[in-house]
Image 1 (cartoon, rainbow, N blue to C red):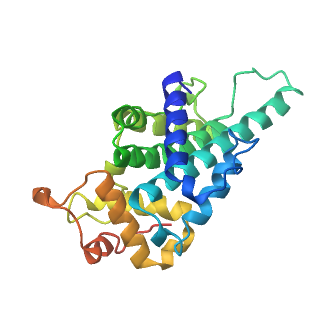
Image 2: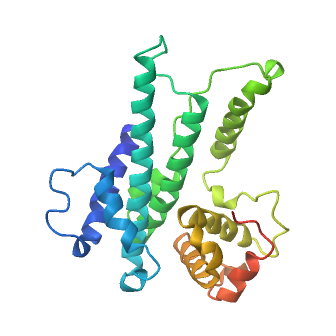
Length: 249
């Protein structure tokens, strides 16, 4: 993780906690100021469908970013802790993680960066917008000749391809899933992307079509994604149409 990214994460955490301070007691973070568990326990109840009606748009964005940060940090710490246990009993390089570990960190950071970028745009912090728009995890891959890749190296090649694709687009929501039906409008692609991300966080949204459409609409607005001609997307029926016949999870 770069110094700039860590600094941006610290800033985002401070902003989010300040925006959510009316929801937690003064001693909530006592003794665990840097604990992702404290952030997770604060934000998960706030993002339940029954509670979101009490939150402002800014508070929802703050809670989403803080929750995804907690998940990312917990995952990151656990992977490195487990890797240390392995290194204590082997001759493994102290800086090495497996491809599957790197892939997991990559996915969690991508998810967090997406919600962090949304929040940064809501609060209008240009520096945070810039950092999270460019955030890319460090994926360490052992160089291999593609001609010599065997069945056991399939995962390595997948991670290499994923990293290459991500570098080519800092906006993964603009990349069409090849299994999706042809989009009638360009914004269908990001709508489907955000729908999948939302369902990854809350699988119950698969059966809550109205709520899912509302959350997708919120994501599109935060990212400044509009209809043809620059018109703002506002119809939930249209959002649902974009998700029709699409495998969301």
